[in-house]
Length: 108
Image 1 (tube, rainbow, N blue to C red):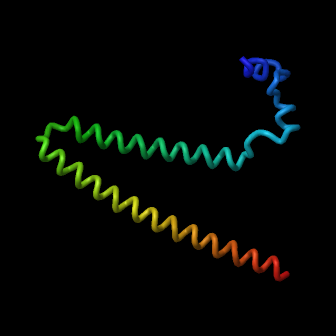
Image 2: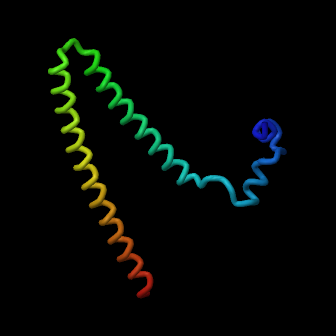
């Protein structure tokens, strides 16, 4: 394995010094952002799976369960639409702020 020399002695094909010289690696900011995204996705996925499992194993008739699933799906749809609109508004505001800063810096 190629990673064993790197982990044990630091002199393998992919040593830290070689990676740094080549400009490789992931910036800390980017790594932190991807970790937050991964945790968020895992949390939401776990919540959805837990809700589905709770509905499937609940002692209710099929008709009641389908009604509950439909209600839950409609609620999630509304929540996702609301979140998308807020995100879009936030992105548009950030773009406007960026454009204003760019115009200000080019004018100076």
